[in-house]
Length: 156
Ligand code: RB5
Image (cartoon, rainbow, N blue to C red; front, side, top):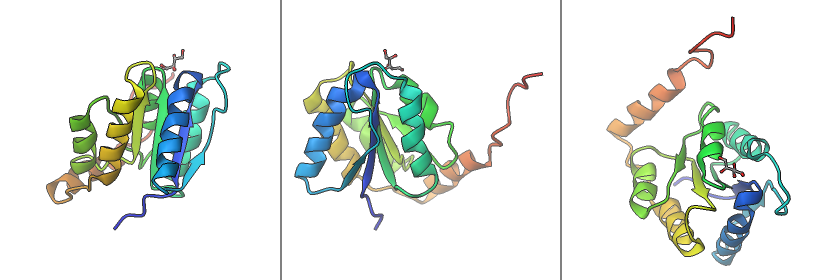
C-alpha cells in the first residue's frame, strides 16, 4: 500500500486560504503535511510554489502533493512539466475519483477562486482514499514518461 504521507502542500496568494483550510483538515485526520508556502495572502508567483512541490514529488521525496492557486490552471501547467508528476485539476468528486483510478494522479490541483471549501474537502477526501486500478492503466501512464522533455518547438 502506497504511503500517502507526508503530503506536500503549496499555493499562491489566491490559494492560500483554501490551503490553510485543507491543511487543518488533513492535520485533523492525523495525516502528516509539509507546507511549502506561500505563507500569506501577499501576491506571489504561483510558478515558484508549484515548482517546489512538483519537484519534491518528481524526485520521489513525497508521494502526494496538493497545489492550489486561483483557478488551478497555472499550478497544473507548472506541475505537469515535471517527469513522473501526474497533476490533476479536479473541481468535482467524479474527476477526483477517476484521477486516482485511471491516472494514478500524484498531485491534486484545486482552484481556490473556483470552488468552496466544503467541496474542496470532499474532493481531497475522495482523492486520498481512492486507489489506482492499475492493469491496463499502468501502460498508459508509463507512456507519459517516454515523451522527451525537449520534444516540441525549438527556440531557434
Ligand atoms: C493569481 O492572480 C492567479 O493568476 C493564479 O492564482 C492562478 O489562477 C493562475 O493560474
